[in-house]
Amino acid sequence: MQEALQPLLPGVEVESIVGWDWSNDPLSLGTWCIYRPGQLAGILPDLRTTEGRLFFAGADSAIGWRSFIDGAIQSGYHTARHIDDYLNNGSR
Image (cartoon, rainbow, N blue to C red; front, side, top):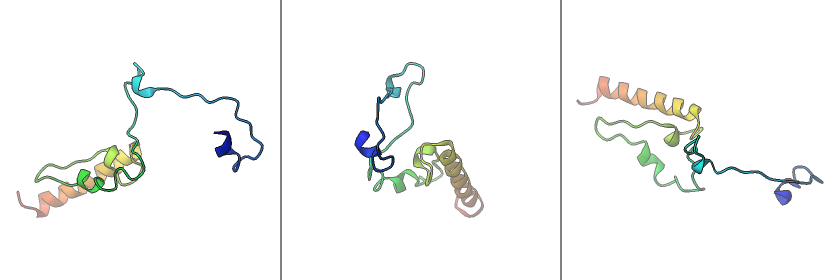
């Protein structure tokens, strides 16, 4: 961390770093979804694909702000528009 901060804050001295294992915390029971760089490049379009009358929405497959409430809202809005289009124009 010391090395990473030097270009941003020359002369800064990191005295300590604290982390927490949220995945094993008995009160949080997990954390948000975090993908490795490039991990979703091939599968994200499939996560957003409808299957017949089955539509998917969620924060982890959002176009922006993935894993945040903003992403969940955006994904829900996007999916609701697809459902509306399906009900008004698609086959049943």
